[in-house]
Length: 207
Length: 207
Image (tube, each protein chain N blue to C red):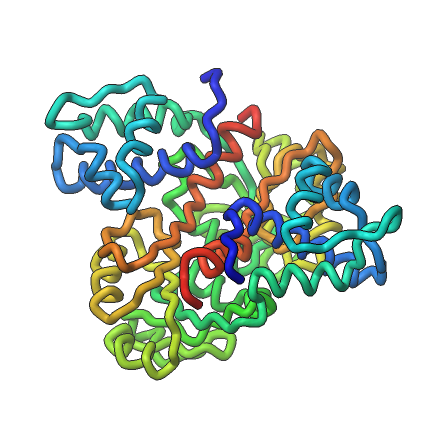
């Protein structure tokens, strides 16, 4: 895939994909853009525009073939490409993510967890082993895992980030509420739960 | 607040806010827009534009007063307004969110959890009680909690959503990987972890 798809389109395509999975579960063969638009409370023309990006045209009056459209989205968003990651911080959120099996359908494989708590080290969660953080530099090479999922407490976030950078990690999916200071060749993706939540309350509720 | 602030701006303002907290921890009095921009690897003009929306001008050469800017963001994003919510589904993710104390600083108060597992019902997590889901309609009125945080397994998501809608809930923060079918007067905010992750891998990594 050469063209860049905007973040908003990627976000919507994954939602369309969820709808398609649901339709397949219900043995429904076709779906129309108004049906998708209705479920998401968005505009029909938006849905058609997004799907047009996939170079896929629906059939007049019956709509899109559910299975075909699903595969096309998977292909475009590269679900088949295995993306190996590891979790740093086996706290509540780290554990929840390790147990979240749904990730694998999207090509996202969590290979291991790292923590500094000796009570947790060497235990296993959802078939994933928790290792001592000291082992991280050698193990990420061995596991060929390139994406660090950061779920450590706030107070350790920068210190652990420095260690990840020193260990050669270039991609960090940051679940901590901190802005991480990293060199320019390291990509941080902030999973800004608070920011997402405030978008909801400030613009979309009367709270 | 009357003007609508775009979701992207809200997201960035919360990140600026995190940086300001860090500066306060370090007893630093002033911050400049290039300092903020550098940490987030974004453009300086973007930072200045966002902060201009708050009607706040920095001092020439020294930048913004950290404490003032922090308060201004809190005011704009209404951190002081208490937003009461409850968690539906006391699984791994529900438990992790219940334990996440950082939410309260943003005015976000989780009042209770609901589940259908009798082993969990009546236990307490982080001072929040887990109630039987049957009690939800009466308790949300009693607790005056308006936002449902949905963390049930995929297979129950629509069924539980229907129950929430019947119970008069108008705001759902959806952590399940499903698109929920709700009436037009119910607002769903999809916390699309997979979509967020794929934005990262498709556009921002070489994976």
